[in-house]
Image (cartoon, rainbow, N blue to C red; front, side, top):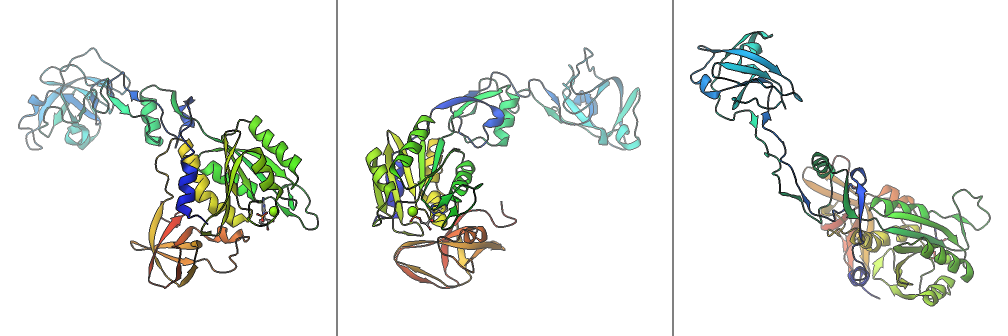
Length: 413
Ligand code: AMP
Ligand code: MG
């Protein structure tokens, strides 16, 4: 028996980030930047107005107030996206909209609200200014956001919507990011039928293919579905060949890895590559296989649907994230106060639970109802895995545990 942490370490040391690809920026969300992004321009490229108002010489407004306004001659009206050859001379102003370039001669903008236009509406050949403005007031200087030559986004950055916006403002329709891993998903077992097949006596549908594929997608991989291999060596070998031909970066198999039982899966995996069969000190999800087939890593998940999902979270998720170039591999965890007692055992428990937030505190209780590792709807009722340390027989209500969040409780994001 090996610990969860040891299994994880042994798996993760065999993974590394994949190569970069040039990709359109709408496809880079949540992916890792593989190049340093420098700016070849100032952003904004020109000084512009931060407000709708009047561009003027701030010196003209000295002493201006609502009681003693300053009157300026309005020489032009300038909308965003337009320029003017007219200059602002002392005693004059140019009506200006947010984002329009600051005209020559002006070095400040007074907001409409501080002028006769704001007070009475409408504008004309002159404007009264009711407030003293300081130089550069309401002006966004060139390069205020980004300076030409600056390192804007460093290699290794995980790209969010704001980074996409920055790339767009730099005029970068494509960037280098680490490519997504292609993950083969192969279910094994004589009892399995595909989603669209009739169920015969003794058969069940291959649900693992879908929960696993969805987990792969959620964490940034590309599922390559190989379907079902019955417990016959030729079928399994053919599926493995299919996966290798599809140039997958990782094989995920389900079922057939338990110790003790005779299993064609174990035999074939062992003969096709170098695979170890482990007993991991966890519940659910004790059996696990790991190794390589012709250089492609393989994680053999247990067959039970809950065990497969929980094992995926512990072992396949960080492997996929590593291939994606990510460095934060830990599943988000919170500390929870138990609302009910729960029992543990010799193995580390990943207890399906419901976490809620009351005030600033996360509370948790185990999901009610049937909870065997074959009960997939128990995962539907859970939003967290409550981690009961190995060797803990009982956790009482009021005590604290760590919880791995599968999703965040309503209202927390
Ligand atoms: P095994 O690991 O082969 O002993 O399978 C453990 C349990 O998981 C059995 O009840 C199987 O029927 C079930 N199981 C195996 N593979 C799948 C699958 N792909 N989808 C749903 N259940 C499965
Ligand atoms: Mg089986």
